[in-house]
Length: 194
Image (cartoon, rainbow, N blue to C red; front, side):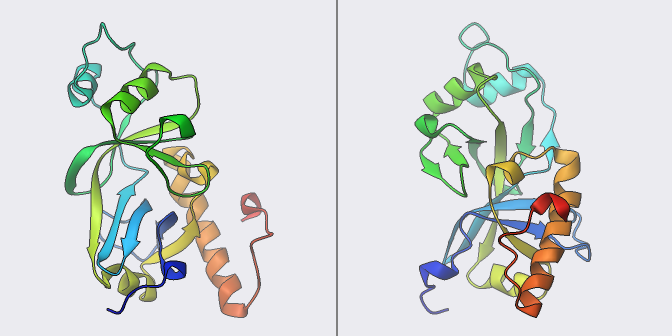
């Protein structure tokens, strides 16, 4: 594949599985693309919560219960089948190593993760283990075949409740696709009306 122009990068976009996707891992999933270039793509599934006990959470963060208060109502999400560190998606720029999407920040450093977990009232957060990866050109082919709808990643979309995320975003994805097919600019549309 030739060098991919930055305007064609899917970094900071959401992949929303089309209703026709039958893959048990990716069916009814929403994935945030964290990195995309001519070599391939890396993303994390957003709506696959795991429910480890607090002890498992502390082991993952390498922290004892006495050092960090236990988070309330926090789950860890399965990000995909590829191994990787615990990553937090959150809305606090000061505790981020990167931004992906509008107002969506990424933290993987231990100090940032510990700070985020200890301040559970400071905004939305998703803790994610693992990731999904696509080889060069693979994701582009899947999108062209209609397996995924592509939407901009925003904080509202990334932190939507697990159970309503896919149904809501698939409606937005279908609407976005229809608008692009007929040449209508749908960027001014209210996504809650979809």
